Image 1 (spheres, rainbow, N blue to C red):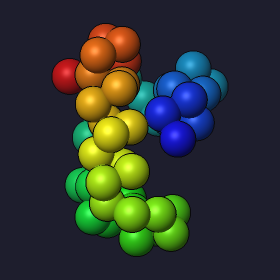
Image 2 (cartoon, one colour; image 1 turned 30 degrees about the horizontal axis):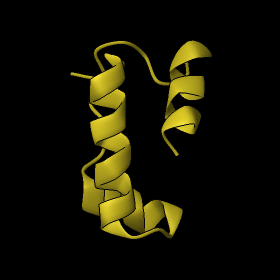
Image 3 (cartoon, rainbow, N blue to C red; image 1 turned 90 degrees about the vertical axis):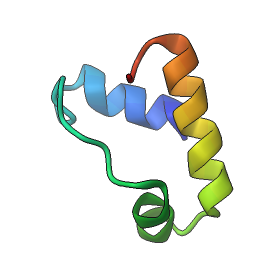
Image 4 (cartoon, helix red, strand yellow; image 1 turned 90 degrees about the horizontal axis):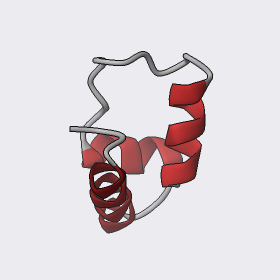
Length: 51
């Protein structure tokens, strides 16, 4: 999941400085558990991809 978000960022489809949807909203949109989104957000933060 986090690689998909990174790919969107690299393509410019998720511009720098834009806000990501909340974990519950994103989980609902993607059809995954909220915890999956939370883990992906943590991984992105650890990689420095999001703040």
